[in-house]
Every structure is written in structure tokens, then in C-alpha cells.
Image (cartoon, rainbow, N blue to C red; front, side, top):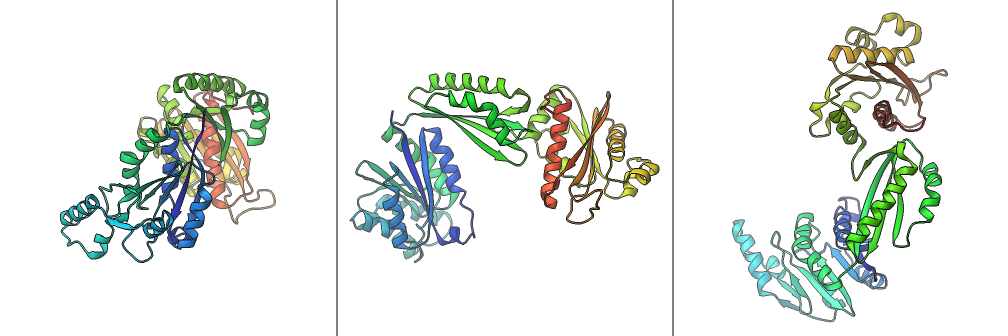
Length: 419
């Protein structure tokens, strides 16, 4: 079984200057994996002929497929077509279908076809034109020494249509690649290093054609199992077996399978149990409410919240006792417990959660430095609070706190993580 490798080359000074973000490569990598083609490398190069040639020479030593985007416009800095004509020792020749396509496009838009745009229908004689039904620049497909080179526009919607309609099906037919299947397991509440220790023996025993990747992100680790095999059906069964083994090793840390954010997984759980939730936020300033309401259908379980940033709001709206604030302060276990209990009663929800802390960069004291944050959870059975100590910038303190609250709710609903 031969793994089919691809390399992506993005062309354009605007990418290197940071004026646009290369979203094309991520999309292409995802779609190539679906048909069993693995991306070996992604390279961005300037609008310079020598640089493009160097990238092509280097790419063909590693990959079976070289996919290029960008540099196909009508202006002088769009060099890709001329570079490819020289690279494959051929001349530019008018392609009648491409000319008809660009003529029709301009006519439908109410414009006269310019000479610059007419020149876009001239393509290297040795290429197979790839129709662009959404733009003026045709793509080009070259075959040389068993390798395939495809040049496409950098405009994302044009490239995606071209890839979906023509390039991906033709690559699959040309190379007949093996199946690549990914399984994603989402974990929270455990550091990557500790997770790796727990999974070490199982990971070592994985079959050679199945690999595990650790993908840490803010507050959690995505585990990705990737299998490559000729038969998709058998591979699917093998991966399911390995996922079950993995799940048995860290069951309390797994909150979802697949590309599911924590707030969506939590929302699904709340719906399944017919539970409602409300939030009382101080230092997070509404960010937890945002996380909940970013999920479509969250009105089924999220009723609302209060941003009680000032102590007057904590007292007048949430009903926190003045003596609680006087004796313990706003950033305290006592205060945050009252906030969680009171928001639950005021909004009539099954669950209430609360935050109060010092997000920074100032406002800390020796006893309560920046990053000191209390969170709380309350339901019909009672209330509990947890102290967080973050030494991060303001935005990260807010984001980590929101994650901790979501995870506290998850713990309290018996999908708990280890304490």
C-alpha cells in the first residue's frame, strides 16, 4: 500500500506580508484527506519566478501531487502561468473553452471583455485546462514523470469549486489512494503530559497503520487517531476498537467524540436531562453567556444571566448580602456562592453558576493577586465553589475561567473528571 502525498504551494506577497490569511491550505488538506491523500508540506512563496521554481523543484522530491494557488490574475505581478510554461518547456496557446467561459462571465456581469482578461485564456500548451465557472482564471493540470501539478486561483470560492468539481475526483481516479480515516476524541481537565503517560502503553501497541496525535488547545487536548488502509470498512472497525480501548483509559476526561466544542457537548447533556441554566458573571463579563449562546438551539436550556461587575449590581440585582461583601470581599467563596444560588432562584433555573475574580492586569493585592478567581455551581442539592489561580493576561484569565465553569457544570452532572 503506497501512501499518496501532496504538497501545497501558495503564491503571493500578500500572504507573506500578512495582509491575507491562507485559509485555502487548511481546506485543501481536509478535503484531500477525505479521499486518502496526505499533505506532506505547505509552502508559501512570493510573487517571484525564481522563488516559485525553487518551490516546485523542492516539492517534487517529496510529493506525488503539487497543488498551487494564486498568481493567476490579469496583472503584472501574476506570474504563475508564465513560470509554469517555462518550467514545462511549452508555450502559451489560446484555449477556446476558457475564452468562451471568460467572455460569458463578463457579458453576464455587464462588462466588456478586456484584452488583459482575454490573455487569461492563453494557457501552457501541455496542460489540461481546468474550468473556472466562477472566475476569469482557468486552472491548469500538468502530468510529468508520474507526478501531477495543478495550478488554481487563490480566490477561495473559485479554488474550492474547482477542487470539488474537477480536481479531487480526477486525483482520486489517477492515484487510487488508500483510505484515510480520522477519529477525534475531545478531552478536558488533564494536561497533555499526564494524558500521554496514561495512554503510553496503549499507544505503543497501536497497529503500524494507525497513529495517535495530541492536539492541545486552551484548556483541553484533542486526540486524533488516524488510520490508513486499503479497505475503509475494515479500517473503520479497527479504529472503533482502538477508540473504545482509549475511552476505557481516561473515561472521566472525555466530553465528546468528533469536532464538538465543550459548550455544545454540555448543551446536549442539559437538553437530554431537561435541565436549565443561568449565569451570574463578574470578572468574565458575559463571556460564559456568549459561550452558551454561540450554540444553535441553546434557548432550550440557557435562560439568561446577569453581568454583576459592580458590587452595587451584586447587591441590588443578585441579592448578595452587604455583610458578605464587607466581610469577605467581592472575590471570595462566600460571595460567589451567593451569586450562583441567587441567580438560579431569580431566573428559575435548575442550575446557577457564577464567577468573581481579578482578571488583571491590575487590581491585585498581596492576598489576592491578579488571576485569583472564584467560580461556583448551585442546584437543588446545594452549592459548591472552587478557587482558581491563573497567572495569565486578562483575556486568557477570562477564557480559562469560562472553560473552568463549563467543566465544573460537566463534573457536577456526573460526567466528572478526576479531582
